[in-house]
Every structure is written in structure tokens, then in C-alpha cells.
Amino acid sequence: MTISKGPQVFPRTEYLRRLQAVKSEMAKREIEALVVTFDRNINYLTGYTARSAYVPQALVISNHDEEPSLILRLMDAPAGIHLTYLERNKVISYPEALVGNPEKDGYDAVIDFLREANLSNRGVGLEMGQLPARAAENFKKRLPDARFVDCTHVVTWIRAIKSELEIALMKEAAAIADAGMMRAAQVIRPGVHEADAIAEILSTLAHGANGKHGTGIANIYMCSSPRTGTCHITWSDDVFRQGSQVNLELGGVRHTYTAAVMRTFSIGKPSDRLRRLHDAEVAGLEAALGTVRPGATCNDVAQAFNQTIEKHGFQKDSRCGYGIGIDWNEAVTSLKEGDMTVLKPNMTFHLMLGNWLDEDFGYVLSETFRVTRSGADVLTGVPREIFEI
Image 1 (cartoon, rainbow, N blue to C red):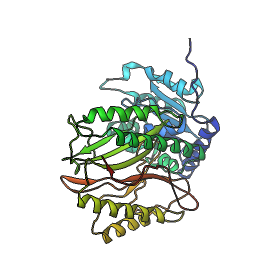
Image 2: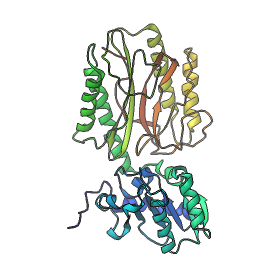
Image 3: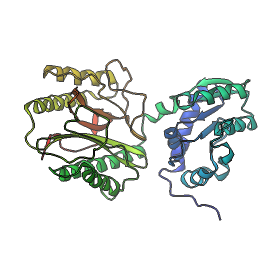
Image 4: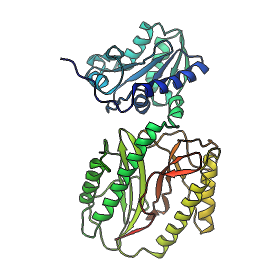
């Protein structure tokens, strides 16, 4: 028996459009093959979503072939066939003998593939950012006649501008994120264990919104008193207490496309300091969103926010956000001063205004938005308030 093809998130034409954009960039760099190793980029170009990147895997794109070749561990090959649009002969497995082998690994199978495809003496692009140093050296050692080009962010930059099909998924993910945050507002109560509240939020993120289920769970960060000065920790083995503050960051996921949102909760009346910071951050958020337009830069958005909260007597040391799409962070754009990336329609960002002022005091507020021809389209829709419990 052979495994069947699963339902495809996007039509084949969408993947071929993306591939053509990559091949155009390959031509500019005069390379005939590109070895993609970053799992998010493999997902973008094939639809492959299995969590198998803990072992070597790669997508090899050749300018001579319409479809790329996906090279996976033997046990992951059926998922490659099922999840992607690729023809069966384009999903290639390497043997289990290369797993846990101190001498050779799956990247050797990728090198062998390049040799067998007569690409070993051509221009070859490598995503160096995700490639272990040992593997990078092995490529150069075993393919001495190849001309290697660092193509770490080539695909990621292409991902930065979404198609309308991708935007539709981002909107669905945003609705799920909103539902998760509103569920949090219902279950965060004095005496409730943080883990029990998280269980309810996770259930909501999986059930989804508007008839669209969540298809994954992004990281959830819950930082409650006295831990509100932290940012990237999960829930604790504790209960919520009267007078506590809770900072919550979560995301909705639709077929790996992620929309994030952050809000602050106060169990009891918020302190004057928290209220003043909230008012400053909301004003800064609105100023930042008002700056968004094609032709503006990431720097412009960050400056608008920073200048606004400084007028209120606060400052934020960390950046104001970053590109978001497949998974949480696209890693090539930052909403910070000095990033002169020009905004273009259908770029999507997490405007992340978490502000940690002291070791024991911080505050969070964020929205996911896309750039349109006329400004910012905010995808998330949770009320911009401190949720007072």
C-alpha cells in the first residue's frame, strides 16, 4: 500500500509561483542549485509541516527542474509524500544508518544527491544560518569544485511579502488568537491555578474560531506577579492572587501561519504606574500604526512609537516588533530605529510593545498587522485595555 496525498493548503500554482521567485534570485547570484535547510522555508516552498528538523533534511532547488527534491530521513518520507504537492520521485529518503552516526549524517545524503545530479561543480547556494558548521565544512570538502554562495535569507525575504492566499490564513490565525485572549479574560481569576487557565486557553486555540480550527500551538508566555519583569517564561505551578498582574502573549496558528497578540491583566485595580504606562503604550501603538504605509520604513514606525511614549515619560529599550508569518518570527525585518527596510503591501508584522522597566515590573501590548496600499490593516482585534479582573 502507498500513502495518499493529503489535502493541500495551497494550489500547486501557488508553490510554483514561490519557486519561480526563488529561481529568479538564484539566477542573480549565478547559482544552479539552492540547498534549503531552514524548516520554515521548506514549509513555504513545499507545504511540508512535519516537525522533523531535529535531524538533517533539505530541499534542493535546481534551475533545470520544475519541482525541487525533498531529502528526508527514511521514516519521514511518507509525511513528505502526504503533505506536499511534490511528485513521489521528488521525495527522497536517506537510510536510518545516517541517524546518530558520528561519521556521516543526512547532509552526506544531500551531498551525494548533488553529485549524482551533476551539480557538484556548479554554483551552489547554501542556507548557512541553519547549517551546522561541521556540515558546511563537509559540503566544501566533498564538493571541492563547487562555488558556494551564502543564501541564508534569500527565501525568507521572499516570504516577507504574502500572497492573498497567505493573508487569508493570517486573518484566520488572528481570529484564533483573539479567541484565545478573550478566553484568558474569562478564566484568569484569584485562586485558579495558572496551569488550569492555560489548559482552557490551549483548548480554545485548538478549537479555533469562525469554524476554522487551530492547526498548531505557538509558544505561550504567561508572566504573573512577581515575574512581570520577565518576558519569555511559561506559566508557573502557582495560583493567581488578588492584586496580581498577568502579562500574556499567545498566537493563533493556521497551517503554520501565525498571528500573535499580547495583553496585560490586573486582578484588582491596576496601579497608577501600570495605568500610566498602558496609556503611553496605547498612544505609541496608535502612532506607530498611523505611520505604516508603502514606502515608509521599519525605522519610521519605531520612531513614531518611541517618540510618543517618551512624551509620556517612558522609553522602550527593545525593538517594537518584527515580521511574522510562517511560525512566529521571520527574522529579516525589525521594527526598530536603524532598520531601513521599506514597507511593501502584504508585509505582515507583530507590533510587539512589551516593555520591561524593572526586574519585577513590565507590561505587554501588541497587534499583528499587514501593510496595505493605504496603511495598516490590524488583523487582531482584542480590546486595547488592561483587563481588570
